[in-house]
Amino acid sequence: MKYNLDDVLSDNEDLWQDPLKTQIFSSLPFNSIIIDGGCRDGDWIHAVTYYLKLNLNIEKEEFILVGIDPILSPSIDRYNFFIKGAISNKNEKQVNFFIVENEPGCNSLKRPSNQLQESKYENKKRKISKVEKIKTYRLDKIISSIINKTEGFPGYLKLDVQGLELECLEGAGKFLKEFMFIETEIGLDKNKKFYEQGSELDEVVEMLDNKNFEPILFTEYTNSPLPEGEIIFKNKNWNLDNKKWI
Image 1 (cartoon, rainbow, N blue to C red):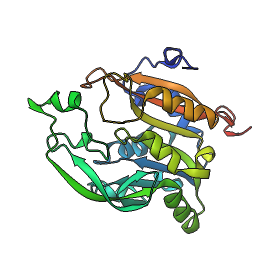
Image 2: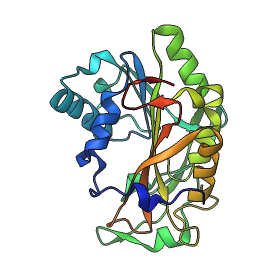
Image 3: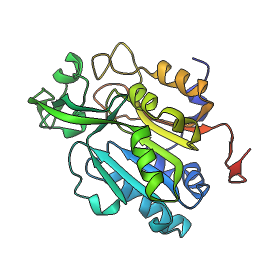
Image 4: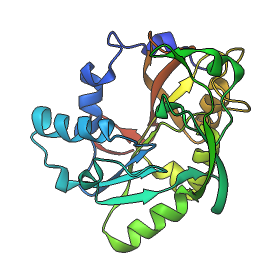
């Protein structure tokens, strides 16, 4: 891999505690579209609005907040737009969605691996409990619709999409290179994958490098059932200090 993630390893497992993440959000221009892909219970967007206000004295109304998830979030009122469905590289009406009932955070369009299903959460195995049919959307379709309704532009993309990282990035189309930052959870060991045919770390890093992004902050999750972490990538053309495009 071109980059050594140890070079950008945070001292904090929770990246919200890292000053660099605060600096990242302070650099976003007003009217930036902030996408919470795979939002579920809304914890991430809650953290965004909390830290914007607490650390930066910025109101959430100065941004366009977008939530996307197959399950209606209990925090839906935190978003300017909420899309019920999953993001992928295709717009489809009926796609298999694997449900892990005792840990919804493992629900995915990709089938959970045997290793994941044999792991336990609250003393129960993470077994597939059922398969539902859901809609999928390309990100470029969602972004185009929002731009047509607002004065927004791509700012920050967060992905918690359970093995579909490559498909989601591909589905962003021409808008991918317009984001200033991309944050994603990702499995770290291709021999201990969370999902069958799920995205691999090297693939995601290579794809984003080809789109002119570089990793600037990384953490590993110590309590994850399989090796997993989170990476924030910065567009190489975005000047974090001067808060403008190069």
